[in-house]
Amino acid sequence: MTKKLLVLPGDGIGPEVMRETLRVVEWFQKNRGLSFEITHGLVGGASIDVHGVPLTQATIQAALDADAVLFGAVGGPQYDVQPFDNRPEIGILGLRSGLKLFANLRPATVLDALVDASPLKPELVRGLDIMIVREATGGIYFGEPRGIETLPDGQQRGYNTEVYTTNEIERVTRVACDIARKRGNRLCSVEKANVMDSGLLWRQVVTALVAREYPDIRLSHMYADNCAMQLAKNPHQFDVIVTSNLFGDLLSDLAAMLTGSLGMLPSATLGAVDARGKRHALYEPIHGSAPDIAGKDLANPMAQMLSFAMLLRYSFGLADDAQLIENAVAGVLAQGLATADLSLPGAKRISTTECGNAILAQLELLAK
Ligand code: NAD
Image (cartoon, rainbow, N blue to C red):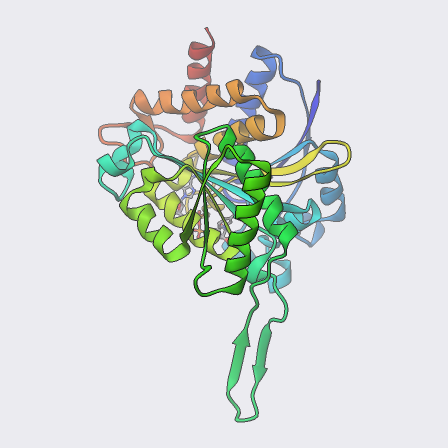
């Protein structure tokens, strides 16, 4: 069945890494019988340049109509003059809220060829494969009341509120449990139940939901500060982590750095399954628009390609096809070919375009 893809390359290196990824998409259409109806749209600075705003209503509608959205990156110094609420990055937030996406999936995997790129010792990270599921639309970043007020004595007081409801905790936990079932069947729920009421509720709700709906899952709980330590000390103990917006923000960046390579890391943000059985989803690399290397054919397109692999796995259930892309990426690195951002000893430096060529050659080889 033909699937509708909305492609939003964005700014900086976004269009470059997306160009190479679309060659991969094309390969799957030709060789694996997949069929996509692709719509292209503008987001971020590219949308500001044409429409004056980082995200138009038409683009939100196109995203709602699509089966999945493949997003590049947004931003750039030329947009620093924009008012805060019209910055390119607002384009991502607008898409997340327009599509009601609430579960951010951040895998942290270490491929054999890149073991030495990690700041941790090779024996700690070899074969690492963690999935962090971060609640993305609630918690302290959005909770009310919030603000900065002036007190009678002239001091100022800034405040934000961490708020979670049962439903918000349950829906993100279900996403994490469904993913855990397809992996090692282990889930670690992370909060600060020792000092935060919202954390205590989080722990109670997760415990009850897993017992009720996912009794086969091996559930553990960990305080967020300990989790940060454990990620650096013994990251292999984790399979899937589920946590709040704030803690997920910090822990997923920490986990990303265990892999040592920004240009390799994909992500997904998922919504609820709607009445028609469709789950809105947006897939994007975690890196930004890298203005320092944009337009130079230097960017690593692998994070964008791996985002497409996540799209195949999580939106369309095509785990074998997703694995094919992941194997092709590992295969290119194992051949000693790498873009300049990867510290791969003795590797031959390749450009963005050459990386695309190498991935396609690997796909041909693997598909034989
Ligand atoms: P960045 O991720 O764009 O770049 C950080 C460093 O990593 C740079 O040196 C860059 O050259 C390098 N890098 C990033 N991706 C790479 C890739 N695929 N291949 C090779 N090298 C890569 O972060 P930044 O410099 O802090 O931000 C630049 C712009 O991107 C800012 O406007 C920021 O707001 C925006 N941004 C957007 C997103 C997004 O679109 N989701 C995320 C983060 C930052």
